[in-house]
Image (cartoon, rainbow, N blue to C red; front, side, top):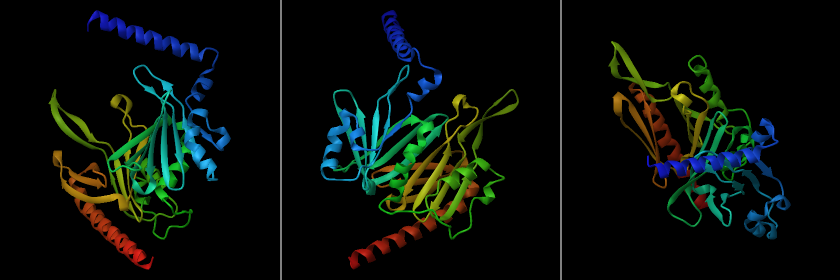
Length: 330
């Protein structure tokens, strides 16, 4: 690396370290951690000045105050997260990014959201929306990162996206718990799957795929294995296709946390099954808006994948016929 460039990087590093130290002087470790916590806003009067231009039309129209959460900015060595505000009305999710002199706004009608992704790895959490932005035909995605301690603030927003215009209440499910058999195989994923259901959502198909490892190079007479896919699960309910996978493992040893993807059935264009590398079988989830998700399974899972695909076709056909019938009635 050229001496001049190295000197420049050192100057940047020293400047950021000094800034970080100056901001944290006099703060305990707990108080410093609190600075990274998201916070909710409960009324129009509490909205910070830089965001008021967005909320003024809502207030003038007499609209009830929406769900609003602010994730603060925080400084890292090579990456800086800017402050973001998330606003959830009854029919739209809006992300606002505070970029100093300008406010960047991304609006997603709930009916146009193809996937909402929630991840939690140790204390690093993220909410990501994928779909069509208001007034546009091109697919987009927007994410907000926050301290996982405050994930309860974002839970109502995720629930609003997943439920759409419906009000879902917890209640007894008409089908037996499909995850009981997972308890001995993977207790963590049994709990992950149970907590992923919304209201009285019914599970029609559920596949738990353990970690897939393959032998790559023999070394010193012993096989060397590589993980090509972490443990993951796929749930088909009467409303959604849900995938759950282990989060990236720091240092490549143990897995911490997980990643949840919630995809409304009406936003899935098709499911397809095909051969994948290393003798695996791949499930491809094609979403509206040219977005897709691919998951590898062991070859032995093909029959279960075909059953899931057949049930998906049945459910989406029923929803399509139901929608046509309601349209004629209206």
